[in-house]
Image 1 (cartoon, helix red, strand yellow):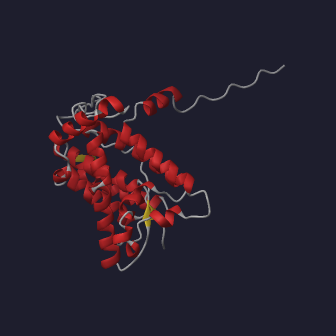
Image 2 (tube, one colour):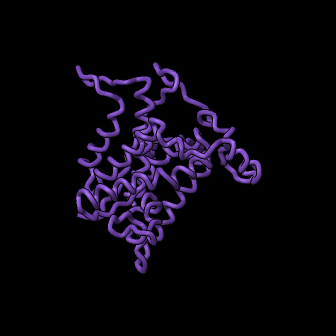
Image 3 (spheres, helix red, strand yellow):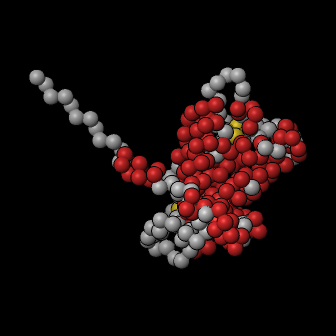
Length: 271
């Protein structure tokens, strides 16, 4: 009797993936759950989740301002959602571990969603006179890449490409062009707006929107958030990543590599 052929080994270690998922901080988990929930809702045909929550420039008004918060967590299909989840998870996990859960909530619900969305509406509607809708969490992916690129530029201003020295802050721009050429129906303008806001975040111009640590400590103590909420990252627990910092060769103080293993897409819903 012939012995059945052995299955080829998996390209990743399932136990390591499981360990990584189990240690995700609270807000990152909630964002992933919301993305999955909206994708599941889109499977029904009675109500269009994409049309309801996408960023449509001419349909954003006082009664529809919620679109500035819903468009990053809504996707137009399974693969669109999957690519953006793979791209966003390590970046958001890193941000939350570094800055704390309350800070992550305040920034991503506030300026890190509304500012790139508002800039996109301003250019799309009043300069380009178009009305192309966009959805997708890659708005956050490119924003975080832009912020990381600025921080890396401060310690390593250039990277070499043959005989050329290219500023490290331009790396998200190259990624933006690459994704637009490689993937159809992506919004180059949406990604570019996200990168510009990410640059402002990396340069420190958005610090005024970060809640004071004194206020955060008061809220955490009053509500006992660290004791009540599993995987919560407190303002005092956020040590440059509450899980520690991985050593980086030839890296100076404050330098952190740009995590560009995955690149997501903001889906363009119009022509």
